Image 1 (cartoon, one colour):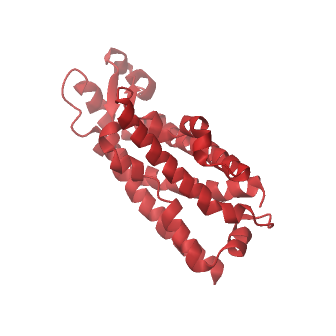
Image 2 (tube, rainbow, N blue to C red):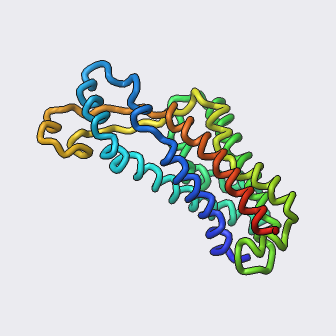
Length: 230
């Protein structure tokens, strides 16, 4: 299978995940409990304009996730084609990993290494899973999948390689998804010029939304497999 076809197939999963996360993510939930202190007035304004916050913050973050995930997958394909473990491409893989970008920079080296190894293990499973598909002669994604594996093997593969939140869940206290919000950039009211910028930690909500999105995408992909093999 061509690299382009492999990337197109992977892009389908990424797009579904990003869209499901967007549906599940609640701006109101992310803002809950952040209204104390000098930034309280800003949070109150943001609660009343959640749609603006979604357009200016949530959607760009998800677009970055889409872009980085696809670029990371290209590196995984390079590892597969080279017959080398994905760990040999660690630097490039981590550069495109959205979770690693949210990793606490002050972590002790041994804790950071534990997270890195967990991330690389997931990517190695992804590489191992797609290798027999990538090696097929078919030029399109689903024909290559059907040529490489039977239905039960594909369903098992979906359960193994589609889930991506494992490292995030297992090392929850090492991640912090934060964004700096300037009200003037998000809200159109002339009063926003008097409001201070605030930092929003949305880790809990992004973990919840991504977990639910992950389950949805696994279910949808299994349905796709059933339809393709019928």
